Length: 523
Image (cartoon, rainbow, N blue to C red):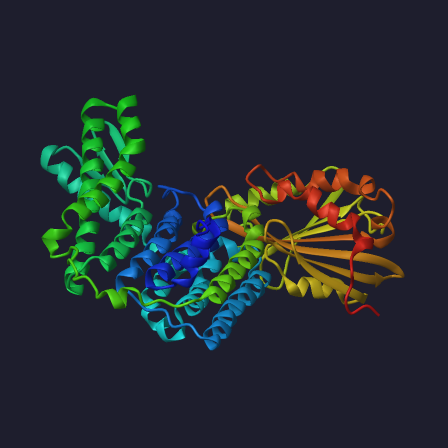
């Protein structure tokens, strides 16, 4: 007899396609689809950013898919299922492209990719298990939604109130041991000449959200009544709350009675994460006290265990899905890195905000440029920089506005003849548009892009950046040398936290390759 090769073993495994094989493949493909998402997501929950909780549901999503194996769903995949599964995934890919084009960098910032992810799961389930079994995976698809922070933005918005609540409790406990302590609303405790502030970093609401989303898959895999599972998860939140109150109370009391020290500061830095993991370990250990556990199931009959099919086409389709999405999501790696918390705190760019005023003051009076500020119809302040104080067609003019304003683009094009236009994603996920126009007998390129800018107060503004450059300049052999230095100089007046500061070479490159653009609507 010929020896069995590794290829024969793999082929044999595919031929013996059953519930266990399909479940493992589902978990593996979900993990592969999330590779780029993992690479742009912090692997820990930050004390200063509650939206970083999303790493928990993302990591637990393949685990929950694996836990679905307890249902022992028998795959039933026909040709119709392959077509429907492919349709689900095609809709997922199309929606990803369309929404990214519409929302620009906000698409990745708010993790709208994860909001669409149930469609990807539906496609995978349909080609691996069959459409008839799709309903049995609804828990997996619903859980995937929580990996998009936009779902829980209202809860994250309660972070301030949650901090005040914890401060009042710590003060009430401290008052029992130190009568001289006093409470200074909203988050300060005064005693022995010290003013102790309990900030949102001390009681990150993101850690509590992360704990619940970690316990949900465990509650799913445990055997037990639904009511007991809910009580168990709520007990986990209470446990973390008690542990954290003990941490804050102990640190506050030690600080007030003994004064600040490096030891206390060091403990304050890392003890919160230790308590988070401790709460998880304790909840797993005491799950049995809530009537949760694993019931030993009787062995199935041999005939049923051997029940299998051949789903090579479904597996190949899933591989194609994964490759296509990895290619589509490659540009996520270069996104601006703004968190959903920052984007949720977005403010208009106007002089009523000190940080915005500081930003505008940096832009005004840049060497080689003159500046004008004016109020656009929306009431927001816009800043315009004119190169060389003139409308010289051989030098660029850059407009900075408080928001990406399509009306402003229309106004700029109003007295021009539009020859063509195109739109494309830059490497950072922002959507850029370039217009080829004739105005006053001169052929120009108008470049418009929507960019985020991080303010010092932890919020973000959206800035519409508009650039105009003569086509004759853009199509010279070395066009960048004519305007790259002053243009970069103006962009780099933004400080290091500005996304714009690193973008000058990318924008000028877009101008420099103007002759290589393939225009549509060309007249």
